[in-house]
Length: 151
Image 1 (tube, helix red, strand yellow):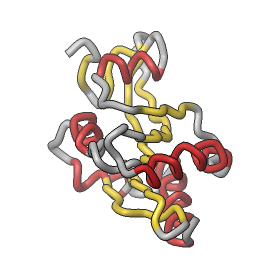
Image 2 (image 1 turned 120 degrees about the horizontal axis):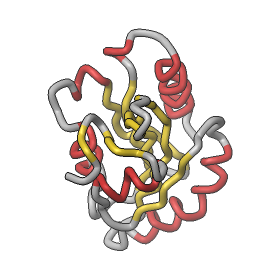
Image 3 (image 1 turned 120 degrees about the vertical axis):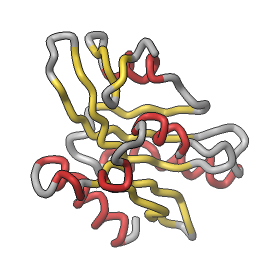
Image 4 (image 1 turned 180 degrees about the vertical axis):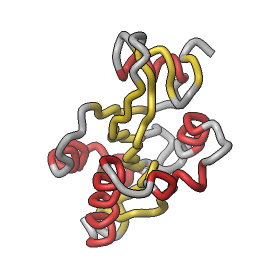
């Protein structure tokens, strides 16, 4: 893993717990590049203001690129509690290059082991609905990113 990747991972953890919420990292996208896991792009809350954040997440699931996505996901449960969880998504679409697919599959567990506090890791091969994603977060989840999971 590159030092840039380590720094961005450290930042998503620190801003998830404190700091300026408008500058908080919501997505860190990482790919296997030149033999290392490296950051390809990050997105902060300010860049997502006014957008449907879950729909934006879906746009990161490019059909030709295998990748890891650290997602600072906001959701709500039936008891009205709003929660935030850091989720690791391993995106491995069948149409991605075979070397990218292999790297993501092989590195998934060791990479997850480097990320303390990740409560949910999803391995996705195709885009998923808000409903499916909410169900993966827990049976009492009713909203993901301010929208009902039934929509």
